[in-house]
Length: 402
Image (spheres, rainbow, N blue to C red):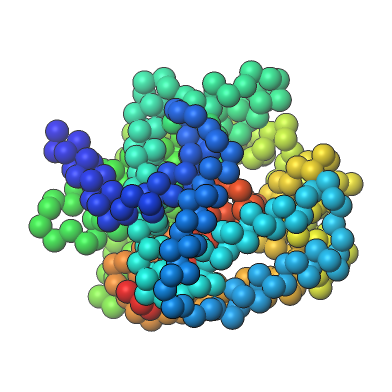
């Protein structure tokens, strides 16, 4: 009962901090992958536009590196002339909406507070979906299995993880549960009076949900984010190694308890594939590397892939398989340099100014950087992963105002 009461108290606190428009924006961003309820494509766009209007009501500064990226992308499309089947201009418009509001492009205290509310709303919903899916695992509720019964989809579920819980994709569940775990760990850090053990229980439940989603990239990113948070909060006290050794010991002793949750992960490792019939990630990585080598300066064009190298690009479908490699393959060294510049400034500030909230942002940045190795959402303006990545960078850049 204490755990349930604490869980609902955390939800109430998250809703209280997020307020209504940011909370609706956060829900709209994630709505496309939530199983229960209706799905409206791009429903988050009008909410983000409202947020942009709110942002423009205040005086703001502009981050040069983000501005240069926004200006470079249309030039990139004009220069590289990607195939119209990929609809580069439409995709650029969607991405620009996300970039203008979520990224560090616009900076002010008003915008910083508003973006923080959206991030807290997103993380609160991540906790709801992750904890809910944890119980769904035992109750036999799986919205991923309800989406389609086609042979290709069944093959995909069989080899890439068939459990989505309250979400329609196991990969989405892994990312959302992992970020929820980082948020609950942060909530445990800032508690001074309440017993922390129940927060740790929720962290463990969310990590187990990430495990049953069979998303290796999300699990590794969750561990990386947690380690970064631990180091940031304990580096001056010299307790970091002690904490890590303690965690490793607990994991070894409790292995029989959580081994069964790793069955999907084990199966995926045995098959050596993350995407089953949809194509090996190794093939996608090789394709992106070849595209980059063919035009290293500007890439092959924003939102485009070479269908001859990766047949997933046939028909205008873009699934690059890695955000880091797609930045290089689509926008070349120029785009990659601008993105790294956007990343480094907030990273250096957070690293030099330790606090619980800054540790959360640093952990989330580490999560995104690790997760982007094997998930290609960084330029997908219509997807929730893109918005999550950029608002984390935006909030990290905003830390100087808070």
